[in-house]
Amino acid sequence: MNIVKNKKQNKGFFKRLLSDYKVVVSSDDTFEEKFSFKASKINTIIVMVIYSIILISFTISIVFFTQLKELVPGYSSADLLNRAIYLTKKTDSLERQISLNNKFYKSIEDVLSGNIDEFISRDELSIDSNLINSDIFTISPNLQDSILRKYVENEDKFNLTNNELIIENKMFFSPIKGEITQSFNFNENHFAIDIAADIGTPVKSVLDGKIIFSEWSLETGYVVVIDHGENIISVYKHNSKTLKEQNDFVQAGEVIAYSGNQGNLSSGPHLHFELWKNGNPIDPKPLLNFE
Image (cartoon, rainbow, N blue to C red; front, side, top):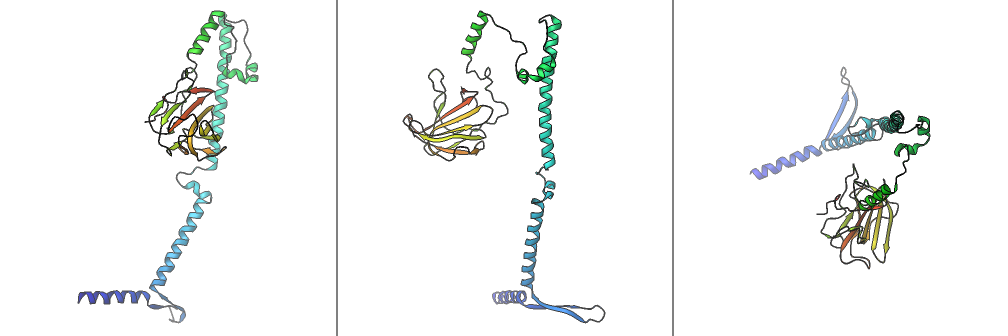
């Protein structure tokens, strides 16, 4: 009995939902009918849903395609960005002026202390902008000093600190995870580290940059070279496939190739990874985590 009763109630509900109703608009004083129309509950619901979708779409379009989007948290106004750029340039200009002043005051101090007979005027410092990053006075070293300097340069040629190879404010991504099968060794002309990896393992860019080389070679298979700016270059060799072409821009951590065992110089599936700064090879191991 309950089942039959429930079925009757469901049929009654759907019947009321689909039934037409007459909507009449009449005068409040004379009750004269002005106009009327028929509508069902289901039609009313559909109209309300369509109206809501149109209203929401219109609101989103207004907010995100007009200046109103500046009021949304996370969006910066164009004026704010321009102001930030202006302040950045202004700060750089002030730093250069401070550097010039320091050089000028140092020359005056040397004159007053008797180290030199004359100083370079501030106007001359301003004309030669290269003096900002170099010494004002050139000192001629003696023979013993030259021999010592040459020895130190040769010993520390690839020292990270002496060659300013510790890159500040850089977040390096590991190009690949795996066991290091051959470490960086300058004496053996191995300016890279080899990381064992299965063929087809994604290879990622260590920093943002621009692809300056992406080709296949007989000795090293598919090779990708990325210029990261600030004289930093990374090299990825023995890949089975490249995903980027020359002049493409990539982001740090973006997949650029798949590792492989390509090239006559490959001794097994691995990635040959090189990192260069100012034309000198860097041992990537202190900067990256390959485990």
